[in-house]
Length: 190
Picture 1 (cartoon, rainbow, N blue to C red):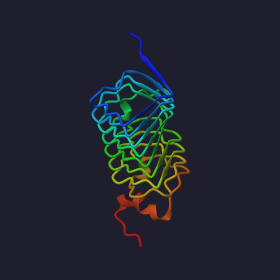
Picture 2: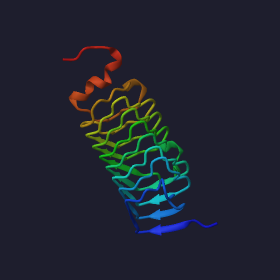
Picture 3: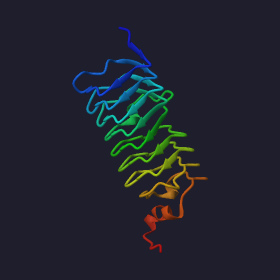
Picture 4: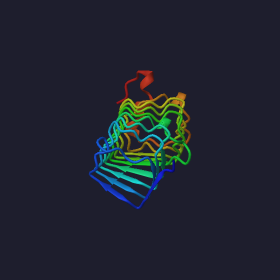
């Protein structure tokens, strides 16, 4: 059975929890104000796609391909990106809520997170080399054995991680964020 192919199509205001998204390949498609929460996106391919003001919380994304996909103002709670197709994985996030999501062991080099809330997100063993966290809230986000080389945290806030347990060479931090890097030492900074 061959997959359905969609190109240059816009989907607006569609509730895919009622009518399932057709399994297939979506190239240069735009999804605006669509509901994907708790839906099955398994084995679907998105390439050069945009998701705007969509809710993808708790969607099943095992073996789903995200190739150069941009999410803007999306709610994306509880997504396990480590189960998606890793071939050519490329994502960017602008003004999204990614709480309780996981990027365990993923190659996320050069990924841009902008104005995004990432509470309790797991980046354990992820490679985030040269990524940017621009004005992002990283409350209780986990960086453990992660590659954070050249990552820009200068405008990020609420992060706290063990610098000895991550690779941070040439990472950028603001003076205000240094306290989160020293939290394990239980010292007072004034």
